[in-house]
Image 1 (cartoon, rainbow, N blue to C red):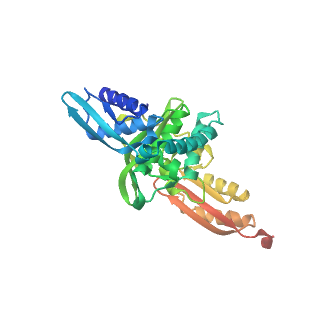
Image 2: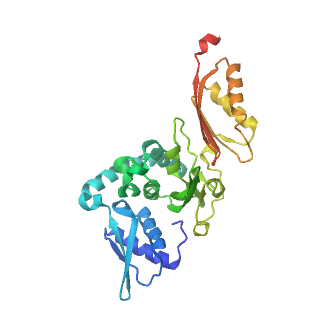
Image 3: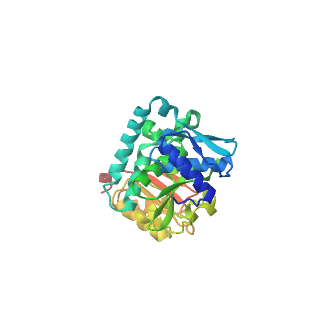
Length: 328
């Protein structure tokens, strides 16, 4: 686990985890003193790390005292109660497909990227007006190809932990132009270093250009639009595994941007994406660079579609070229 448990939290986690393993709906946590919000967080963390966690409703718990005994109650999903075998078969089939695809790689980074890319390419965010309890669970995207942040984060953690990579969940806040809201994402450990991943936001912002803006981020990078209880998690200080850096698309200067655009256009790439360093302002130069270079190649641009995430400093655009024969 990556989360920094207190002694009481660890006792509660072990009791709930073991109860879920037995497919029970209660756990005896006598001797533990935790408030409901903390207990719900511990329960959700047990779901994320237990292979049978997808059978449970992660949204609510109840607790009661019986004399000196302290019991916490939680619910299975309605689908797990009524159609347990069908639920397990469908979820395990989809999880095994993701697992087997990731297992083709030997490098843990490539395994992570395989799972992450599958989620982004295959699933959609569940619209606010149609959210059901199951959409918060890790079973949701396996059954319906859609979920909310909680479901995605829980499912991602379950699969990645099964691959032997330590993965946890973070409950915090995210911010956008619409304001701040409760949010959940993941944190992983790789080579004794920790990194943030937010597959939900890459699912929500995906377009015609594939890019993973929230894959393997440092505290500084994800902190631009996310906040959390930093005391409960190790520091994520390394930013070398940022997806853009690994693909030569982390831009610090105008010359680097020009070189990237020239390379992509010369290759007749239909898309370009990059992340700009916080010291570099790119928006004023990009259209001029694209047009100048495309005309020098006698292959002018017919159309450009932009997609910009100001908060995490990423930009993607789709390029449509004119027929070059008329310019030769």
